[in-house]
Structure formats: C-alpha cells, structure tokens
Length: 376
Image (cartoon, rainbow, N blue to C red; front, top):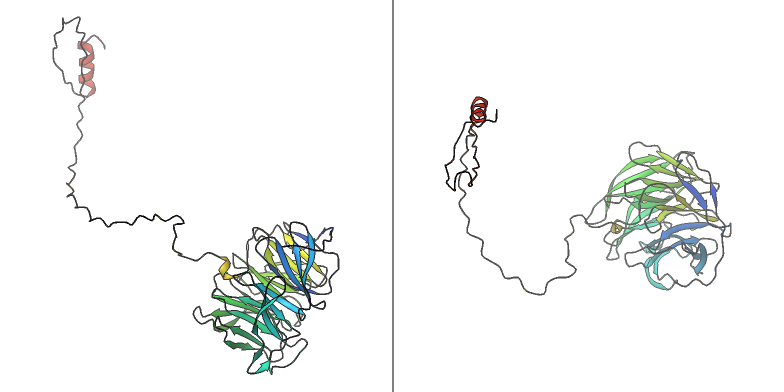
C-alpha cells in the first residue's frame, strides 16, 4: 500500500496498573479528534476511524507513520475486515454499514434500514465464520428507530433484531474465538452480556450477565477484543478491563491517561493490543497472549488435510492380503544349567576333536569344572 504523507512520531511509555510485564506506548501526538474502530489488516497496518474528521486512518507498523486512507466517510465508527479483506464500515452519519475497499471505494451497502426505517447510528460490528454480521445501533446522534438494538445480518442479506435495549446504548460487540458466544456491552450500564450463538442460523439466545465493569452505572463501555484463551478485553472510561469468565469482576486492568474507546489485536503474531483513546492510538505489548479478530482467523477443527502436491497417477485398489494364522507362542521354561564349550588347541591334539562337555551352571559343578582343569 502506498502512503502519501509520512509523519514521524516519537513514542513514550506510560505506567499501567495491575500488569507489571506490559508496556503501554503512545504512538501518535494528539493529532486526531476522536479515534475509534481499530482493525488489523493481517500484514502491516492498523486502520482506525477519526469520527469528527469523517476519515479512516492507517498506521503502518513498519514505518511508524500515519496516513489518511480516505475521507468523507460519514463519521465512521466501528471497522472490521471481512474474510476477503474488504473493509466493513459503520457510518453513523449516513445510518448505514458499507463494504469498501481500503482506498474508500464503496463496493456495497450492507445495511441501512430496518422495517423500512433508517438505522440510528451503526456503532460497532463483528463478523462470524459464515460471513454474517452482528452490529449495534444506539442513538448517540440520530434517533430513527423506536429502540436501540443489536442486529444480525445473515450471509444472504436478511437483517433481524436480536435484542433491544430501549433507550440504552448497546455498543461494543465481539464473538468468542470458538464462535459459540457473542459478547455485548452497554455504554450506559456496567453490564457485559454473553449470548449463545446458534451455529446454523446465527440467532442469539440465553443472554446472561458475563461481567460487571468497574465504575458508575454510566460506564462508558465501548469496543472489545478477545484472545485465543477466550479472555475478553473491554474499553471503559480510561481503562481496558479484562475478563476471563471465572468471576464477574475484571481479573486485570490497563489504565490510560485518556478515554479508551476501542481495541484490537495486531502485529505479525497478533500479540500487540492496539487501543484507540480519544485523540491517540496506543499499543500494549508484553501481555503474553495471542489475539483473535474473527472465528475465521482460527483453523478449522478436524479440517481435512489436503495434499498440496497430489500424485496424478490413479491409485489402483489392491485386494486385501490373505491373513496368516498366528501360531500360539509356547512359553519356554528356563534351564538353570549352563553350557560351557571347551576350546581345544588343535596343535596340542594333533588335529583331533574330543567333543563337547556340558556342565551344570550350579556353582559346585562350576568349581569342580575349574578344579579339574586346574583353574580353581
């Protein structure tokens, strides 16, 4: 990818509580207005939104530089790559979700209304293994729908409401690494919910309280990420709070000097947590985990092994071999006697062979044998 404007950014480390091995580094220099929606392209770039500037920005990990990839993007928010690495964009101002090229060309409008009415402000999204899209639609700016909802767009394009929150603000949404669960948070609540996913239809059921964010009821909960161990990373106020399902409260917390808005894993090994926070992009290293963006990031369980160099010669079936009867093994009772072979000097015996003498292995016979031969 070509980067037309290069800016050198000096980074500095920030202190963070509860995770002594980690390092939090600020990558930018307050040049953005309000950042959101970070996503890794799988090669060398983190893309994220600058909402008030209505643009999508690219951060190149190799050059540590930022470039505006496209502008006039209708106040973009959540971003996600699909399996073909088209960029799926939540466009709040237009009330729609689009599929774009990384240069900004609109390839398709995926969702723009429900029940014939324009969506509110599509905020965040995630994509399942079949290409279905879960997305949240709170009314932070525009109010069109009678309720703020969580939706699912199936691979054929049908959109169904999966849950409703009245005037609450459903925000971050992410799928567990095994594709079995969906997590959702609410900016006006401390609750983090978990749903069961029907693996065939994509529909959700059995909403439970998975975690409780620290802070007031107006938690400012926002974007989320997951790692291969199934741990959930939730941005809330000036923190990223980490849940592992063993308890309702966070097991670890990462602190930032400004509001954390969203996060994603990236880098060649997907071991760096990138966090958008108000005017800046941060990275967190030393977590000792590997991140996941989609269930299709992971290899199929029990996937067939395909020979990359198949032999074009047809295989001719051969008849099964005739089984050979197995004879029973007769146990051999060990003998306590030893066989002693006496070596003879053929020069001394004039070539005559006097035979083999067998002696018992018992000690007294052996001593007698030695005495007879002048050895004992």
